[in-house]
Image 1 (cartoon, protein in one colour):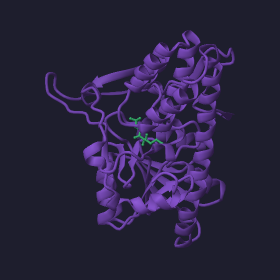
Image 2 (spheres, protein in one colour; image 1 turned 180 degrees about the vertical axis):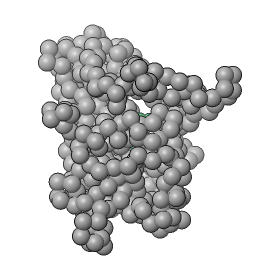
Image 3 (spheres, protein in one colour; image 1 turned 90 degrees about the vertical axis):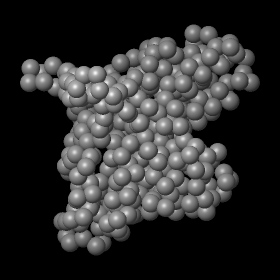
Image 4 (cartoon, protein in one colour; image 1 turned 30 degrees about the horizontal axis):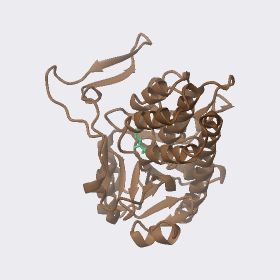
Length: 364
Ligand code: MRU
């Protein structure tokens, strides 16, 4: 993705080779800040406090976090401690544990002195692979968009609704839900994106709208509750969202509110697609509602909103009375029966054990 004409990924090795640079997403869309992580503690803070977020990017950051840990201390005990520290940061997105397990498996048989360099190479491999996977998701999603374009009058855009940020900022590059949109634009298709603001943290308003603006993608920001109304009036051709964890049955866990969009889509016969890389599939889990741990975040995220004041300062304002209770489950599960299809790097699968088995015969 380009920011002001310059291509960026969302995470990369610092030029001095001793740190990992990230975009600190807490300040977007108001300020584009890059920070350098120099220790496993800093990597854990960046994930837990959502300087970086989005399932694939959390995974890549955790992998680099292990590399930073190995530079400090490459012992067996430090490897286990670093893995546990990073794994405890966010419970729902499975990419985090997937990336940590991949790096740890690679490092465990090595002599300690060899671990830091290999961990770094492995983290870079995971990041590069994410970019390739997302490009492939984009190509597979593009086929669906081309088919939709055939039913449109010349110049009439395909209207896509998305929730949260499953874009470039949630991955290393391209995004998952946004990859088909970006490829469609390159392909000359006319697309328009309705962006859910995505309370409580507003990743749609602050991140998706920002990256679509930088990419020149036509879009309209809407409040979370508007989607059903737009669908009833024929204004949405397709929903594409991301996933934090998809079960072997095809249930999809994603940002809170995704389930309600899927219900509205079903009621209005709007196709509901989920774009996801295969590391987001948890092959050990079948029933998403019963088995996926849902992150409960701080009530402050519900009681306050962050924005830029008229004086130009980024500030937080309270929107609920002092002393009241607020609950903040960060994700929900959309059952497979409400999902039209899963757009993966290997193709579009039916959201079912059979559908996933067809694309990933080695896994099921
Ligand atoms: O809490 P967040 O911002 O990490 O939640 C992100 C999402 O729910 C995304 O939709 C999901 O991680 C898919 S990212 C390609």
